[in-house]
Amino acid sequence: MNLSVIGGTGYVGLTAAVCLASKGHLVFCVGRNEEKVSKINMGIPIIYEENLEKLLNDALEKKKLVATTNLKDAVKESDVSFICVGTQSMEDGSIDLGQVEGASVEIGQALGEKEGYHVVTVKSTVVPGTTEDFVVPILERFSGKKAGVDFGVCVNPEFLREGRAIRDFLFPKDTGIVIGALDERSSSFLLEIFKEFDGEIMETSLRCAEMVKYARNAYLAKDISFANEIANICQKIGVDYLEVRKGMEMDVRIGKGRFLDAGVGFGGSCFPKDVQALVSKSVQSEIKPRMLEATLKVNEEQPFMAVRLTKQVLGALRGKKIAVLGMAFKPGTDDMREAPSVRIVNALLSEGAEVAVYDPIALNSARKIFGDKVIYKKRVAEALNKADACVIATEWKEFAEPSIYNNMRGRVIIDGRRVLDPRKLPQGFIYHAIGFPKAVKT
Ligand code: UGA
Image (cartoon, rainbow, N blue to C red; front, top):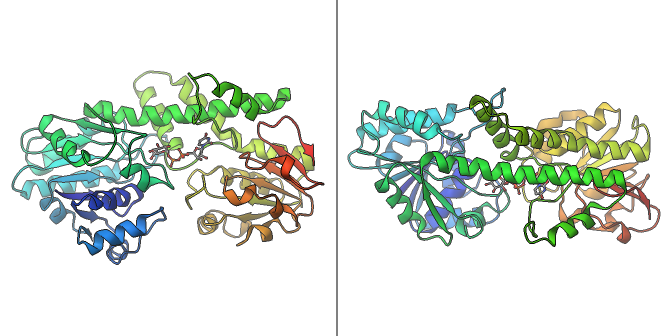
């Protein structure tokens, strides 16, 4: 099939484009920014994601992917288009549909000029009802055509995790594939595309598919906040959360592999924004979203737990040299959107500490946020050199190596992600962690 991906230079769009091209479809990857478009055509992936560069270059070589700024032609030459544009939060927490609106207007105009049937698929995360009540009317108005007659409409939410997005897209065994469709003809196109992928397919309505995405993310975020709350209680009553978690996981109804890692909280472009958007939608629908609000509240406060522990061990922080290890919201990415590290660094700075930061790949992102307020170190050993304390904010593997902490001055380690085993640390360290009963001297 011929496919177009609108927002194809973004994170979800580019991932979808290269993966769909790898299945033999001809994919038009549509972006607004000429520089990004030409980089993609040169085989330079503009974001970091494992295996993306290889898949992109394979697709270009086989002439299965073309990046373009011309949305109209892309839609006219394709059978299905995927809307993958961003849906950032507005100040009141609801989502900004500006880019979805822009894409829908242009697709509508293209459909007006196009001969034959076409399926418009919303992949961007939008609150339930958006496709039916907002996207479809725009498409109809600007095309002069009728949804369900002249063109089809689907919702196909993405369940990609940053850092393993290509794997998640190509092997959706763990997540399944959700296809919301206006009618059978619309869904038949997506079924044809996704029959190539090994994952259970669920067919449903447009609204339900949109809700599945929010319900999943809210559920996972709620688990993390639950874990953090339990970990905070564990710490106060002097038990180790990791032990408690082990005990919890013995119950098959809880099980292993859940989102129960306690620490400095969740970040990223999805959980915080999606839970907030669902809160707004619930309030609009006159439902008080108590669980969702609590999920966000716990998460907002959790980064400060790491700062509190640092103060507990070090006393006043004014003039103290503190290294913050890990800037990215999770390992495997340079993304710092809503990263707990931002709150931690800002809190340390406001306490008067001198902060050095290190991350294996996110230092450029950090620079954009902190400017000259912190010191940037290209190596973990440099960040730790003569530090009075360090706070681990991202669970990069290299932070689990005890020998990297040897050149610290103060030898205080606050583990915000439980990456270190204090029993493996050399003598003379003070180790404390979120969900850990009390600071221990090694
Ligand atoms: C999340 C979901 O996991 C994906 O299924 C979904 O498709 C995606 O959002 C999206 O909506 O696009 P992502 O944000 O990439 O994916 O990252 P996760 O691996 O889910 O981690 C999110 C945050 O939660 C990170 O800051 C991570 O450190 C934190 N986390 C995760 C915990 O604090 N504890 C855990 O047990 C798990």
